[in-house]
Image 1 (cartoon, rainbow over the protein chains, first blue to last red):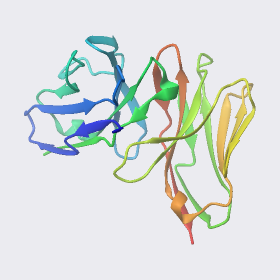
Image 2: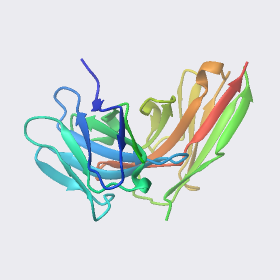
Image 3: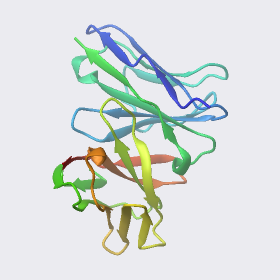
Image 4: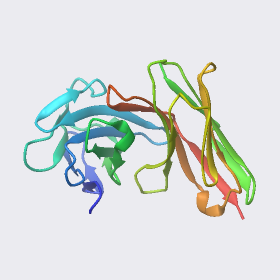
Length: 114
Length: 112
């Protein structure tokens, strides 16, 4: 039973390019949460999705960031026109039900913008 | 406005000693308080968690103490080992909202 899988593990993008981060939840999990971790800081909530629906995007920057969780396939966090300040580790977590008590984290994608 | 404040930022403890990490929260709607352990290059892993209806929870060498009136909770690691060296995050959650608010983390180093 594989855990939460994120890819790529490391991603380097030049300023202005697009970054696509993928998260495959644990088998059977239909709830996905994305968090961002800046260096020397804790995780900051970005967005909570359930299959085909965005439930809570209160932590998402208003511009350039979007997320989806289609009926089939992984959840995607998309960052358009990346800037140096987007450099961070992005983690997703998944859960079987809407429950932070049962959420499991992936190993993260480390985005570096050069 | 930071809703969960964690201290200290870093902590060095001798092997066999007690590590203590503290957190304070503001939002009384929080009803679940987990601690996560994170090793370099890895995602956070749930270590131990508590609900506000109890004042203490112990699992092996790890204990959470919870003070609801003060809105504070702490993690105690007894008999600390070098393998415990990691970054520890406290979090507070409103389980109805389905998301967690994290502290900024404590880097623990246990010296042999």
